[in-house]
Image (cartoon, rainbow, N blue to C red; front, side, top):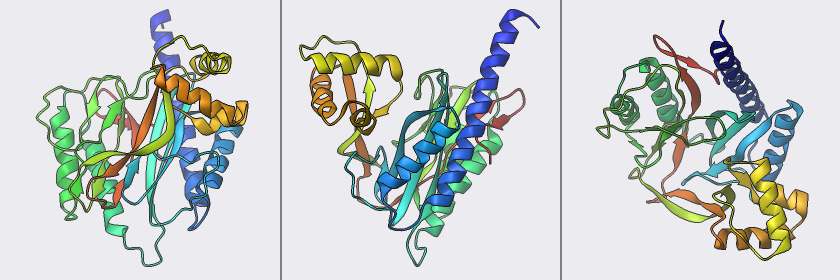
Amino acid sequence: MGKREEKEEKKLEKWRDAGKLGSEVLAYAKKIVKPEMPLLEIAEQVEKKISNLKVKSAFPINLSINEIAAHSSPLYNDIDKAHGLLKVDIGVSIDGHISDNAFSIDLTPEQKYKDLILASEYALKEAIKIIRPGIMLMEVGRIIQDTIATYNVASVRNLSGHELKPWHLHSGLTIPNYDNGNTTKLKQGMTLAIEPFATTGGGIVQDGKPSGIYKFQKHESVRDTNARKILNFIEKEYKELPFSARWLVKKFGTRALFSLRLLEQAGALHHFKQLVEKTKAPVSQAEHTILVTEKGCEVLTKQ
């Protein structure tokens, strides 16, 4: 084996390890989530699990309830509790090699979201079945859309899966959840997050409240000493990966919140908004990280 092949094999090993540990963390989350459990407690326990595995979070855990489809993570002083239809989205990073997986759980006594959860789960399974080199993005989107439609609900069209590259969570290809006519073909060696979202609403999300999730954009000059210190830390620690304001409060205290506002105003950071279904209808999500192989695909986050 040449040096190039050996290097690629080591990278692949990190992707596989990230997938394995990501699925382990997701399984742990499934065990601990209970109705009325504080979201902050869920986040803290999951993050402790990730730390105990000697890896890092690829992004803040998303705990999105009912019509909030994504980008909802507990704040440092959060008092919200788990209820209704909860989406749990978890990322693990090994030297920037990312796994991204998610599940939905119905916390209602009558299990009223059971079919909606099945819609996204089966759409994910059907999409994985057809993924291989040469398949077009529109074909992946079509199978997701058609499978979800069999449950008499809609695919969320402006949320999508994505290609993963080292230190870049959303990089390269966008994997549609409907037939968008894109004839771009998948290639062997691509690492992808496939994540169908299903809803009883119209299938469009829009920006909601600020999420407390940030991402480094560029190194801008700011006068405030603390803000400069925090920006240097962010750039070194998280690089291009999303992070939580809560994490910075833990390290720097609540003064970090003022620094984050200054850095956002300066254009150094991007602050994500919660993504909310436009008609306020509930949304379910399912997600795996996969590797496109010679004849099909390998599910890296398979439990």
